Length: 372
Ligand SMILES: [Zn+2]
Image (cartoon, protein in one colour):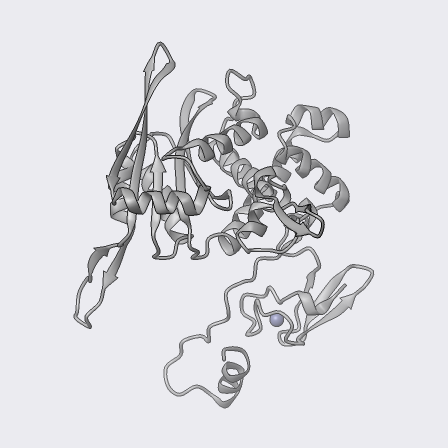
């Protein structure tokens, strides 16, 4: 147990969410509990992870979640481990929720995206159809997040664009998608910046400069592709070519990267397999499964095309494998699934309660110690 790597979880504690400030000590080695000396509350080592308050050994949970993240059917796990089906489903839920938190904390940070591709998958559920929209950063193959909706409409695409925007810096950006016209509207609505001149009221919104939008429209005859039409909706061809060279080396406008990612998701979520029998019943289950698979893809799997060559003497080369998270500079090593599940997402900092009048000396001391 290392008190330097954990933080207090008490929402009312001034030291909430702050690591390495010396306020945490070991309360019990036997029960694996820490104590916060600021608020005198104790908490379990597993607080803030999917292992919290589970009776099953951590190794078994990690093993089961790893199998789920690589597409093992729940029934196979039930048969192999002798667990109840509801237990396995609840672990998947816990892991999915946790991964969504990790994703929001580590991936949804502004970065220079270069080229982004987006696409939707039609998912057959029990008695319903839902659409799953996802986006990928081409250069690092980083999965940027996904959303679900019962219709392939503006709401679905706009919420996906809001996720992409959370990951984007205002730099030259190329967005490639299919022929769905909603993309253009949604991108133009979301990628805007407020212009503030110190006046009252809602500021006017200015669209981002250097934003290119391209569409890849496929023509079908009897469900077979007979032609592909590349359309440039916004931006200049020179700008698009520069961004394509920067992010994928060579080639033209395409949606191949997101289609390849869709194939990975289809093989790893049993409910997404075409003409399969393992239909999902609830959208939330699908949402959590998507975040589990996406985070394991980002953090825990080497990507063949991301490996980097290190040139050695005598014309020899050494290949260094990388995960999308390493390529994006989020981490420096391959995470194990246990590491992903044990990652504690820091809580937002404590804000002093609002009271009328001047703050007391004690409150002032707390603010000086924890809020500076
Ligand atoms: Zn505390």
